[in-house]
Image (cartoon, rainbow, N blue to C red):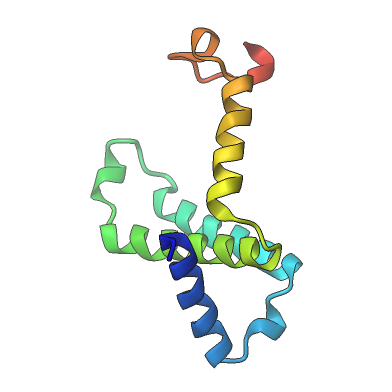
Length: 112
């Protein structure tokens, strides 16, 4: 079994054991994803790039896991193949950000 699908199956089993699917409509999953991403951002708030190396790895791992779990639940809700949508997006980004125009630049594709 594909590793991503196995992870999704574990998340769904955890959710279903608690009968939480009733709360996991697409809108609420997207909102929860945003909230968890904000909690991840909060760990870095007001810290210089040098200070971010002092953030407790466990806190980053926990918040990142929450973000990933909600993202995977949302993908599952829409029946997306996670590997496929990521690879498709990389292809789209490669067209928007060709190496010869974007290498070493932190610009949006419309500015290249």
